[in-house]
Length: 192
Image 1: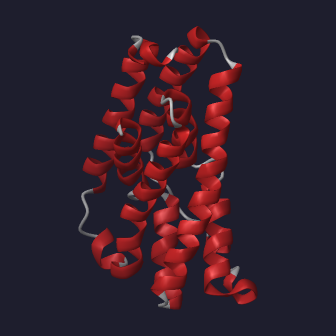
Image 2: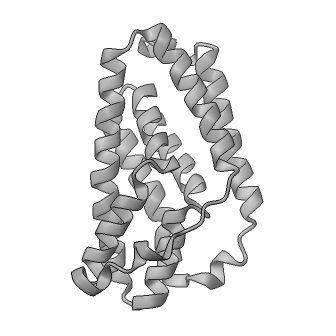
């Protein structure tokens, strides 16, 4: 359950102000159809984070526990730093809807926007860190929905009231604690 709760919380915090949350704001403002947007976010996140979780599980089986501990610790600390850098969204990521409809545009743009994004990389790292990557993927998907569904319904009104620096600082602190704990051997009970 720790994998589920930590993954949910970390990704929900990391997603606030992330480019995919900004994409949710833009799609909601442009199309005003929340349910196809939410369905697209859910499907894109399941596929994207499923791949990331599988990669994290494979890394666990392919890398020695000692090397994995250092790589994961450094990755979590890197994520802490990256979380403090605000994201921006590129306009062409939202132009796909003319061809694929609202659901298709959301699915495609979210999937592509998540590639190499900090929440995807966090999913890889947490799936490698915890013994059960399925719970990590469920948690990261829930975290994405916790951050993005309100963005779809409330839009820019909510974005202007959230203390972004505070939220990013909390997420960065969680990643830093995970990194330091991993470097100090907190995952040794799991074999790394």
